[in-house]
Length: 175
Image 1 (spheres, rainbow, N blue to C red):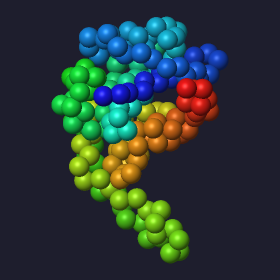
Image 2: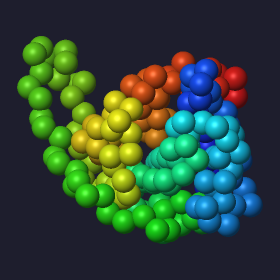
Image 3: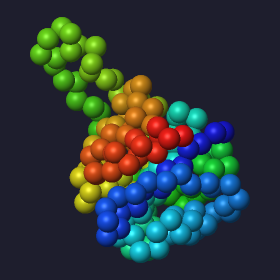
Image 4: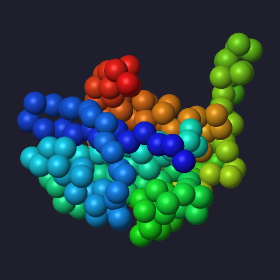
């Protein structure tokens, strides 16, 4: 499986983004150590791991401590070594995915813009890990359940909402 791992850290000077190599990591604690190394003094450290345009895992550390993990789909743990490593100790989120409310489009043109919910999505972990940054658990679960949303799309939307969208976009464009 191919993956993209993007570390996003917020320090005294604001947000910074960088790519992260996860090869050779043995467990989630190794991943957390590498995330700490990006900026040992960061207030908030996030890692977005996108795998094969299917799965997204978000890892969070606050002040280098309090490891929290969210995965867009539990199937990732069964389908890859990286998924098993990242989601090994993660359980079902407290909040269940609510069916995405079907919005009535105001015009016929908007009808195609209303996404359907993917019934096969089974998110795991702490869906509330970004709530204090502006992305509620409900919003994160809704994004993950929206049919047609790629992990990169979710990362971009979440990054924009929490204030580091430009840094993540610049990193993607440089790659």
